[in-house]
Every structure is written in structure tokens, then in C-alpha cells.
Image (tube, rainbow, N blue to C red; front, side, top):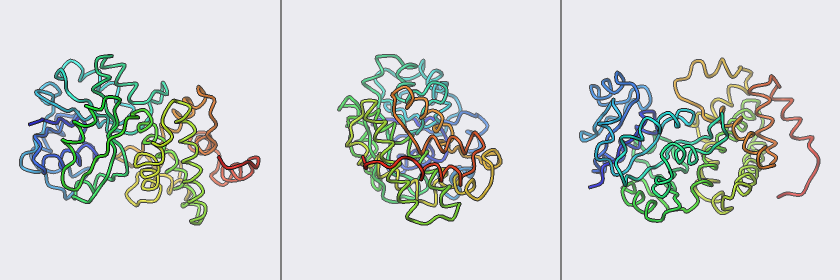
Length: 333
């Protein structure tokens, strides 16, 4: 039997661990704080992130990396994007040879503009590339933990790796589709959070459904444009990891990034909103990182650029909207 280790005990990591363990997969959930791991083991619940979701009896909890990774056949990396490099560096000496390596986080490294696939490849070495996969798609953690039907994508350049992860994780309510474009899937999963903040702002301003539909559609055009410039497959952005995840995150009530945008649209400052949050809205850091990546590739991201002005440079949401609407008229891409 393949043993799975989940590195990261936030909402998504916990949900994946609960799902796998409930379906009979030998699973360990690692928390970076030993005291948190002790609390999870004692209460058999992650009250901070998934209150009311009881842990299956077989789910193991770990607070140290070496024992958490012992005999792991698949390792899921579910840390916040800006912490991924440090986690990969710490985990590298303890990962068993041949283990599948799955990135289940969404974001771009802010300081470098690198995709998480590139970050892990750099930290784990060239030999890890063929074992590396990305898990993404329209999936709220709470619904997965509750057993609600969910379809996502696992992407790898190595067919054997994506098939292995697909077979282990596709159980009951969770269905995985294979994809051969890991960088495209990673990029789509990161950038949809940027568009979700923008659509949340529009909703917070009291704008209608027409505006939301326009932002989602033009946001998908931005994501696809940057993806193609980085060598991704156009079809990736029409699938679960692209359009599917984008629509869910921009419209769903459980979306952290949409919720952050709502508060900003209602007049609150970014610092004020995130100060009271436990969970990370990845779209904030990804906005800056996406513009770094787009600048390198010579790609224009009008929505991301205006969001950057609102989040970090004091521009009002109303002014940013006027700027978007006053751009030169053009043919639809």
C-alpha cells in the first residue's frame, strides 16, 4: 500500500489528509508547529481551519519532518506558496528515493517570479523532475473534507507519475484527471486568485453580474496569454485547472481571495483586512509575482496591474475601474 504524507496542516492539507485516510489510504499529516501537531493529535480535529470535521481513526499526525516522511510513497506539499522553498529545502534530506512529489499549493514565489514547480525543482534537484506533479482545480477544502463530489487535475511531464497519483487519490467523492502540462496548471491555479480578488472588489463596490462576468472572462484571457508566453498549452486554461477553478474562486462563498476583495471594495485597507485573518489569501503576493513574470515575458496584464495599484499603491477601486474601462478599444483575443 502506498503511504501518503501531507506537508501542511492548513485547510487544504487537512482536507486532503482527511479524504485519503477516510478512503483507507495510509496517511500522515504534518504540521510545522509541534504544538499544533500535538493539539491535532489530542482533539482529532483541526478546529482552526476545518471546525466540525473529525479526523478518521487511521490518520497519523506528525510534528517532525523526518518521521513524517518515513516510508512515504507520495508527498503532498501544501504549504503557503511563499513558504514552499523553505519547506522543500528542509524536507529534501528525508524524502524517500522514488517518492512522488505533488504540489497542492497555488501561487508564484514573490521574490523571484518563479512557479512552484520551478521552486521545487531547484530545491530537490534534477532527479526529482520526473517525480514532480501539480494538483489543482476547483476544490474548496471544506467540501472535499465533507465528502462532496469534486473533480481536479494532476499534471506531470511523466505519465507514470500522474497516473500513480491519480490512482492513489481518486477515491469516492474525489476524481482526478491527468494532464501533461504541470507549469500551465500551476500558473492557472496561481493567477485565478488574482482575478478572484478583482471580482470581489467589483462585488464590494456594488457592481452587477455583468461586471463580474466581464472580469472573469477577461481575467481568463490574461491568464491564458501569460501561460502561452511561458510555454503552457492553451487547452489547459479551458479545463478544470483554468476556467473551472477560476469560476469557482471568483463566485464561491468559501473563496478567501474573493472575500478579501469584497472587503477592499467596501472601503477597507488591505492591511486592515489581513490583520485579522488566520488563512492566507495567496492572490495578494501572487499579484506582484505575476507582474514580475509578465514583465519578463513581455505580456500585458491589465487587471493584475490595476489590482496592484489598489492593493499596494493607494489607488481607489473606483479609479482602477475607470482606468480599465478607458483602455484603447481593441478586438477580442
